[in-house]
Each structure stands twice: as C-alpha cells, then as structure tokens.
Length: 127
Image 1 (cartoon, rainbow, N blue to C red):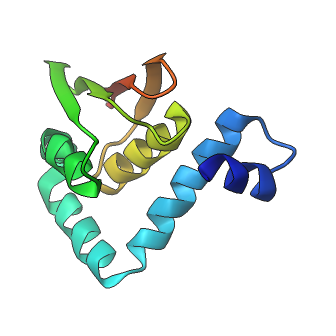
Image 2: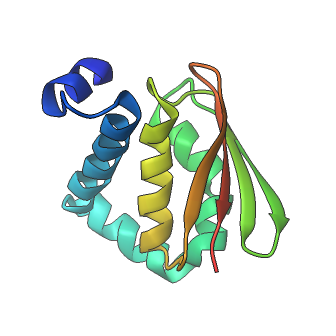
C-alpha cells in the first residue's frame, strides 16, 4: 500500500527518496492532530536521549507486530533496530529524524546500517 502511494505521489523519485518524503509527511500530519501536538510538546521536554529510550514502546504501540531495540553507543550516539519498516528503511529513517529533531537533537544524522526487506538498523547521532 505504501509503495503505491510513494509511486503515485513521487513518480520521478527513487523509492528511497519517496519513502523518506512519505515518512516526513506522516510526521508533519500527525503533528497537527490533538494527540500529535501533545506528543511533540512532550518530546521537546524529554529531549532526544529519553525520546530514543522510549522508542521501543512507541513502535510497539503503533501496531501488534513491531518491536525495536535501542542500544546506546556512548555520548549522543545510538543504534536502533526494528523488525518492520513498512516497505523501506527510509520511511522509518525520516520518522526517526523528524521525531529527534523535534526533541532538540542538533546536527542530527540518521543512517541506515542494515535492511533486509523488513527489519532495519539505524546509526543515530547528533552534536
């Protein structure tokens, strides 16, 4: 379903770029809802470290099959693994980037380390 949406909205972009844009739009849309406004205000208070520590429960609350692990690598660097990315790791890469940006992570980088068609791991760091 998301693949068809990406192809329809951005036929001239690569799948990776299209999924990234879709992830950005999902976050932007959610931010305009009542729940989103409350969540984004809370993320600013929590900051990026605590937002990432809650990522496991947040992803599991999204549906019944997603799970995630967050591994601190020291300082402002983490590795995040999830078992499902909704068709492309760049979708979740954009969601993570947007969420952590809202939480105050400056100089943020979110890189895809591995992706097997479902599960992915990300290297996340900020200044």
